[in-house]
Length: 231
Image (cartoon, rainbow, N blue to C red):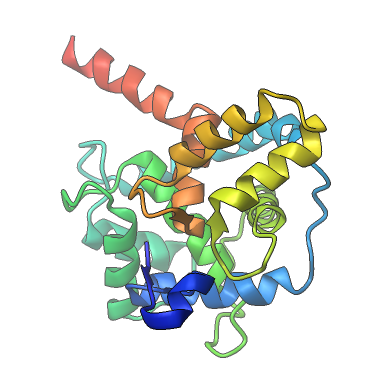
């Protein structure tokens, strides 16, 4: 995600967002970072995994409700109906941009994990004071609390508050937890590689969210369901 500026600014790793959605993510995350994070260590985050997993799985019924043709994915038309039902006010262009940002396989169909990422981005964007998003809450308090935990976690990792997480920031976050154990560097690198799926050395909030759905096992549930359907 994003591209690095040229000339001497490149040495400071200044990244330019490549899409409108990414630019909005960076803008809102930078503003959110100014309020700080309640997270104190990576272990604090890990301890929250079971509750996060439980609340995210509750989205499945919502996903199935709007997957009208029951083909395991939500298309753009189904997403528009979903937004209307949840009283989420976005323009046609915004819905299209969000859909394309979260449809990582470019197959014009949003799977369950992609749907979770999209809902979290909706939650993030509703805090935007410039756009009129005051009524764009999802209407599910437990889920919104979970999304706030994910935002808080990203802010904890984003030490320099630039809206991205770098490899060094990930190492720093892990080291704060493990007190310099020799294995901490390997753990940090493994976690970072799981997040940085475009291998550009910087992790956006969207990439972080996709990694998080894997960490709590959302992808595993989808794989199991796909296998059952193939039998």
